[in-house]
Image 1 (tube, helix red, strand yellow):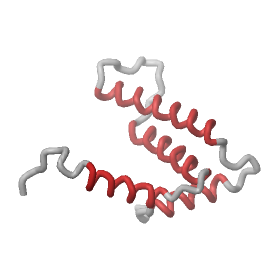
Image 2 (tube, rainbow, N blue to C red):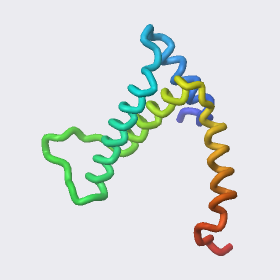
Image 3 (tube, rainbow, N blue to C red):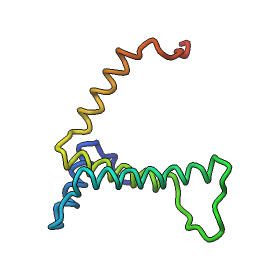
Image 4 (cartoon, helix red, strand yellow):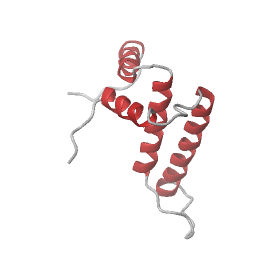
Length: 110
């Protein structure tokens, strides 16, 4: 089993991979289009597994895990291309949820 990776390590691994190509990262607009495409593929898989639209016999077998991986890769490329630290972005959003939305949801009793 592989060692668990931090978000910083994921970002570094993606950067190392992309850096070996002259083309480098796509533009933000192209990455947004790629992310939209990957989200659509994820939505399609979720619909096949949990919705009312079963796969056709001719469709390739993909998994939600695979599609989530694709979304994560493109999201990481997007962040890297804009020099965004995803751990910091995550910390900011968690602070927002813990303050602004702290009383929004019904808590499970302890």
